[in-house]
Amino acid sequence: MDGKRCAWIRNRGLIRAMSPPRLLACHECDLLQRETLLPIGGTARCRRCGGFLYRNAPGAFDRALVYALAAAVVFVIANAFPVVGLDAQGNRTSTTLFGTVRVLHDQGMTSVAALVFVTTILMPALEIVALLYMLLPLKLGRVPRTLPAMFRIVQTAHTWGMVEVFMLGTLVSVAKLGHIAHVDPGISLWAFAALMVLLAATAAAFDPHELWRRVEALQ
Ligand SMILES: [Zn+2]
Image 1 (cartoon, rainbow, N blue to C red):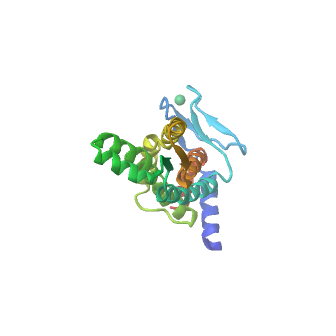
Image 2 (cartoon, rainbow, N blue to C red):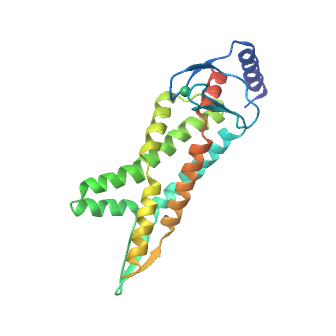
Image 3 (cartoon, rainbow, N blue to C red):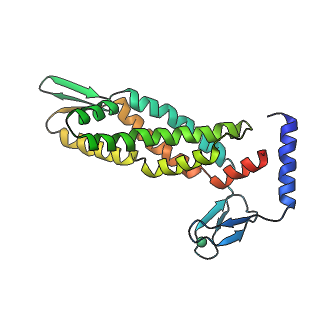
């Protein structure tokens, strides 16, 4: 970002600081409250229900962006390599997560295949893409088009993404299959474990209040 742009954003911040405080609605009970300046690390909560409103966490925006970028890389690795390899009586078999979805579909379990595809591939992919679509341009000083739609996609995809459930199910299966076959955890399984942690870290660092504050400063 050039110096002129930085000065413009600083001036916008000064104008905002001099203007009357904004009103915020609590997401839990809809109570309207005035926004106040918080100390570093401070959290604002609703006066009526105690629900979370916003926080002052310096660097949270950059952390969310870094975690989302790392999640994108790990997501590609997780889907490009086999999840586990099975070795039973000399027969070795291994497949990727998408291969598992295809096998489930071929065996007539289309609804299960659709559920696995949506919750472990489609929704995490949508969440990562929408996050990067919002955060990367804002970091570079531009407001992306269709930002509100992307914001809603992130919220929905985070609710329906269930990588942790998939991990739990896979670990139980690996433990049970260990009695009848030799099981080799694939690189994809470790990548899914990392993806689970990175998505949780991104969600923890992602601050919608900070996001909209940046958008206001750039407009
Ligand atoms: Zn409230």
